[in-house]
Length: 67
Image (tube, rainbow, N blue to C red; front, side, top):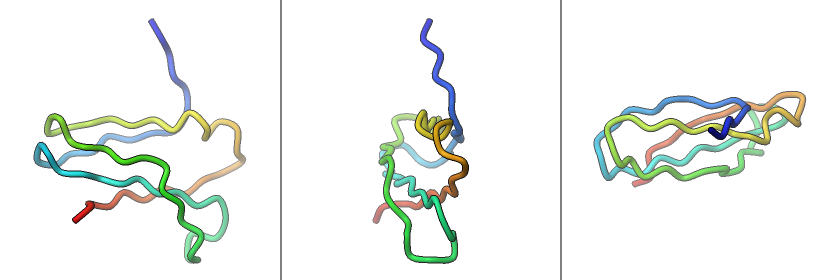
């Protein structure tokens, strides 16, 4: 069994919808957001974990639907 540690979250939407996860390591009110993952919903609920998060002091995350 493989164990992945780090911060993550669960996302709910209709199947086939794309969601982009973006992160900022500094001021979350600024423009320093960077895409870190794109999820295509294969089911109505998906989980994503950022394994890099354990190596940085803090990160802010947002998830957005891709049009």
